[in-house]
Length: 115
Image (cartoon, rainbow, N blue to C red; front, side):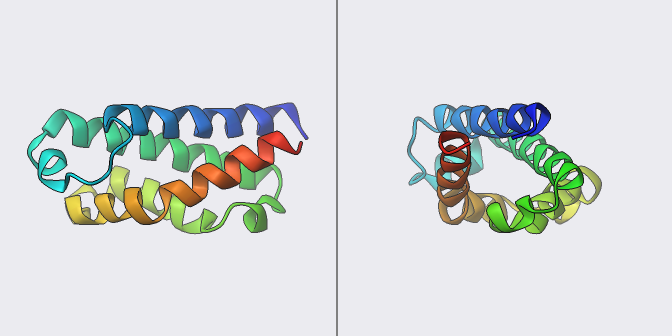
């Protein structure tokens, strides 16, 4: 695996871990997330970084589009958070944390484990 791609995969892994740390590994309390502006912004920032890392990976090697599920959606989320921030709702971000982040974590862990 290209060293740059490995670095970006590690970056994704690290920022997923930060999101989990910010939420104490527990994505069951939406009201806490909703009422904590710092937690929301920190989560969004980490999702932006994850999206940028995925974007760089795909530019370097298109085969990762099949190795990272929803890679185009991850990049689209990054673009939306940055450029259309007023169209992102707390519910959308929360849904991503619950429904998509665990799968992404597993895929990244497996890519790094089997390189």
